[in-house]
Image 1 (cartoon, helix red, strand yellow):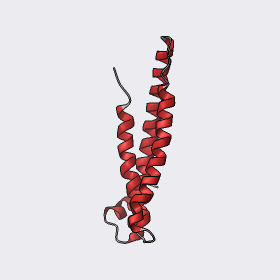
Image 2 (spheres, one colour):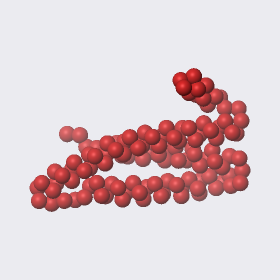
Image 3 (tube, helix red, strand yellow):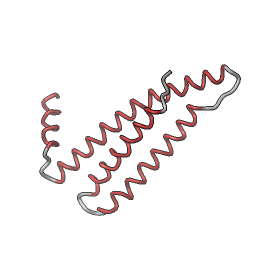
Image 4 (cartoon, rainbow, N blue to C red):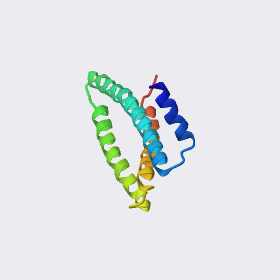
Amino acid sequence: MILILAAAAAACANPQTQTDMTRCAAADYGRADAAMARQWKTTYAYMKGRDAQVTSRGGGFGYAAALLASQRAWLKYRDTQCVISAGEFAGGSVQPMAAARCKQRLTDVRTSELKTLVWRR
């Protein structure tokens, strides 16, 4: 398994074909999505904790519910924005790579946003 990953990483260091470039873009997006999923779990748990603190004081903002709604809206935005972005290459072999690169870029930004929502004291 490690050899396969090393070979894939080496191929992505200098991809020679559009197929390789698309495969590497998809792999990069997959890593970005996995990082966002990990951060999502941390941030969502944190917001649920904030809700518990606020509720214990007699009120409730709904941090976790707001975060969930925000994430759902963001996912829809990301996916539709990347359709538009990759549309420049509609019907061409570059379109899937452009969509994956767009999703990776936006997902990396979202991961950073989710990190900033965890307020440490």
